[in-house]
Amino acid sequence: MSSRVRGKPQTYVRPVPMNWFAAKQSYTLFILRELSAAFVGVVVLLQLNLVWATGQGRTAFQAALDWYTNPLVVLFHLVALGFVILHAVTWFKLNAHIMELRMGEKVMPQAYMIGSEYIGWILGSALIFWWVVL
Amino acid sequence: MAEPKVRLRILRFRPDRDSSPSMQTYEVPYNKDWVLLDAINWVKDHADQSLSYRWSCKMGVCGSCGMNVNGTPKLTCADPLAEYGPGSTIEIEPLANFPIVKDLVVDIDDFIHKLEEVKAWLIPAKEKSLEEGEYLQSPAELAFYKQFTMCINCMVCYAACPVYAIDTSFIGPAAIALAYRYNNDSRDGAIRDRIDIIGSHEGIWACSFVGECSVVCPKHVDPAAAIQRSKVQTTMDWFQSFLPIGATK
Image 1 (cartoon, rainbow over the protein chains, first blue to last red):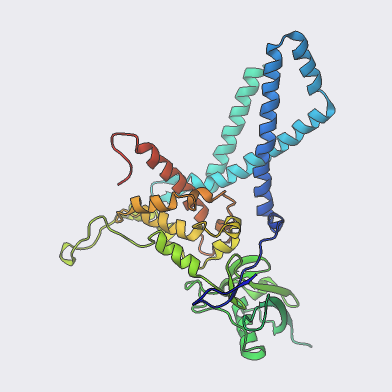
Image 2: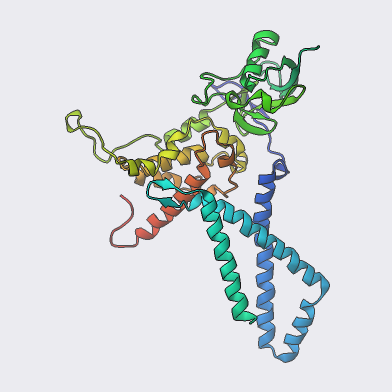
């Protein structure tokens, strides 16, 4: 759209396309990371539903468990898992920009920060696995 | 043997006769020792004198030759032609997200206004007279913000920022990075003023951390880091305001 403001030359403002996020891989990954919040939200609601069903007695709990074994529900959880992993991986990478590791005046490579995040992730997952499964 | 060439597809907008931009193609000799700006200069010198664009130092310091090249904002003086190779077609457009004045020249008034808004200069807490000497600083204090002093105001980060593309009221990466640079300079005393500006709705909180500003920055300033660290700093300041010591002065 071309515009003229008094005292300024006429300029042309390029419109932003609706699919701007498809222009670059980094934009697409960003949108997918944002979208992951919707999947996480639905998973939390499903978990709350399970808690509610537990309070309704054995029959309601069993009915909820049966519903969770529906292939479509399992598929949804697999897709949600994929989004959560995407969120974690892209966020770990970005987080290294925020949290800078320094040794005195020397700034350590971002790989140190990213590596420590993955180590924390693995240790946290192992702890939950030991607590819940073993 | 025919001389190797590259094709430059350049966006043209002549406000006196065009209602919208169009692309124009030029065949330019290929020279492996050239940067892209040399090829654009060849067009200006030998093919079309009406082509308008900005450049000055040709050594990655002045920050005026930023353009969108094949969709990616970059300094054309630091973009070797050898990376494209002979026979290639290179699409050159003005920096995205800015109004086009003519051809590859964009209107930078908005950015200049934002630099003024964030007070991107040193404001000592107490002015010293010449007799009192310099404002001293240790190497460790300098190291804390030095990376952010490298910004050359080229606006390449604004052209890569989808938040700025959608809402130009966003203060944007470079201006916030420079505000962060002065906020963390031990000689500065105006952090309170800047926090109020960059902590506004149009400031750091508008950034959704796409991170592309840091990817394209030709001086490795990492404006995304400055924005996120400013979020931490501003949040700490807000919590601190409830404590007896109060917010940052």
